[in-house]
Image (cartoon, rainbow, N blue to C red; front, side, top):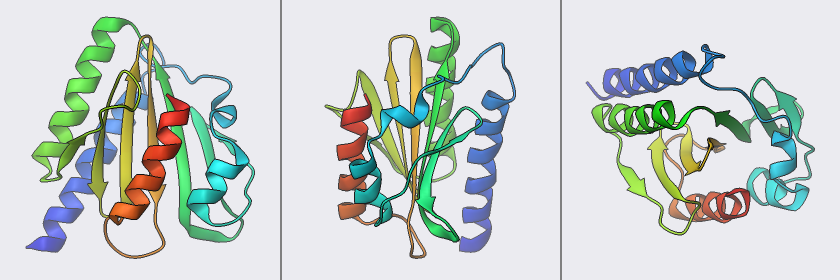
Length: 159
C-alpha cells in the first residue's frame, strides 16, 4: 500500500535522525548554523525574505505563520569513525525506505540527496562534520528538479 510505505519511510528517516541527534557525545551543533545561509539564498528557496531562526543543532528559515515552504539546516560534528558509520547509515536508511539516493558531485567533500514526501534532503560531509539541508516544499510530493537545483545551489555555498 503506497501510503503505508511512505509512512514507514518517513518514520525510518526520522528515527535515524532522532537517534543521531539524541546523542550529544556523538554530535554537537555548530554555533553559527544560521550564518551558513545568506538571506538571499534563503529567499530563493522559501520565496520571501526570512531571517534564520536558531533551533536545536541548526537553523530554520521560513515565513511566519506559513509552515509549507521552509529550509532547515542541521550541523553535526563527530569523530571520524562515528561520522563514517553515520554517513553510511543515512544512505542505507534512505535506500531501505525505497527512496532514490542521488550522489551530488561538486557539493562539498561528499554529498547526496534524497527525495522525500515533503521535499528534498541533502546531506553534505566534510572533514570533521556533516550538514543536513531539508527543503520543505509547498506542494504534496517530492521536490521538483528545479527545487532540487535551487537547494543544490545553496548547498554548494554551505559546503
